[in-house]
Length: 396
Image (cartoon, rainbow, N blue to C red; front, side):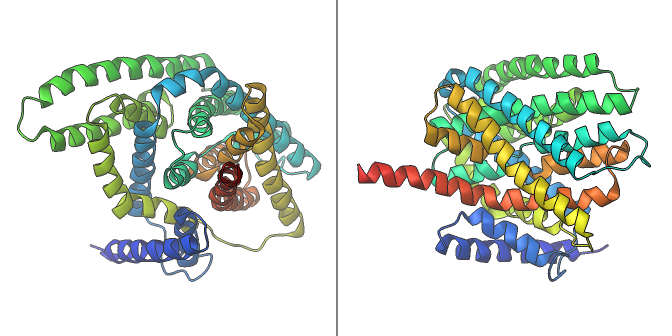
């Protein structure tokens, strides 16, 4: 049996904390330090740690825990009020990047007709990759700044949740055109079924387990364990039975748990587990996935153009949607910036496209670069967006 994973965990935990302390001194979110630690430890720099299946699984638990905690912190009443606005923000946050990605692929002549799919589908798929939003990075940054329950923070969470669904629909439509075995109607029904399932599961959890657990001594600890079980159960069911991202199921579980009187106790215990193990591994694992290979000048230009488009289209699309819904200009910028990060969602979409012949190997490296760069710049931009507001308030 190989015990390298024990050494890897120790190195990751130590390096992410040290780098987090350094970035905090530089007035940047600590999550940036964890991401940079992953880059330094991975094959892109020193190659100390090699990505393993164990680290992948721990990082997946990390993102699930982060999204569950985001659900716990979400103000349900504010989420209801911003529901319509979140839909508009998410819709424009999908359409604008989709068009932008296609345009870049078209002008840079990206794609290859040697693949099984035609050139048009390949270029549209580049746009589909840009529609992805990984809100985990924004959630951690908002938590650090105490802004999760702000108007902009709630809108980001709501829009990201809807963005996932719209992204799944867009992915399904494109992949079904390349894979005739995919039934679009069935996928849409599954997505609708998940929300019905989540509501029913939430009601049962609140009533049955809430009353059952109170009859036992020291119910607080048991409620935390049962809440975690519910979180994992919802994440599994979302992915396995409904084709919805597991983090969406975890977020839904967090929303249900947020209605409990034990909310603060649950959050405190989850925060300890997150800080101590799973969150550092998740953030470091993103950097560990970066492998720098020789890139031609054409691919370099395509990567740079796609990166700029990835950032600007999310800020413009989501910011414009927020402005339409009567958010202030500052809040619109905050919302747009909070949706920049692509994270693991874009990698999952890219892997799906690769398996179906929708994306060639030489285009995979630019996607990884976009994931890493947008993940690193999002917390920096987000803190700057909120800092400006704070300074204005203090000046007043």
